[in-house]
Length: 166
Image 1: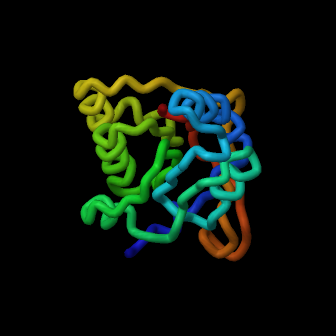
Image 2: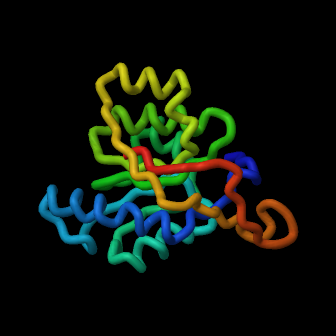
């Protein structure tokens, strides 16, 4: 499947620090410990998400280089307790992801630019009865672009304010 190279940016560790309390609450609510919680990140960049979450006590993270949309179409998404992702921002990825999240009947945490709340697809999701809340970081996150993804060396990028839609 094709990807936009500008979409390849890893989420910084502090972004995961900000949602650990929510992940722990979800685990507790379903009778699991942090190390038993099954987390699904459908968008693969460089694999750092799994390590970041393992470093915070979450051992079961599914994040593989596979086509999320094909998995949805085929009904082969992995079993999970919560979806946690920083999706690609190009094209209609965010809209398609929110469509999946609003219908999957599982908790989700999506890290996207703050302007997403102004989009028609977001308003449509709200009208369907979904009522998210937000985790807003104290400082702007700086995303890491893996070497080769945006040029010849690793770069940090943060052209917008982003926060977790949960």
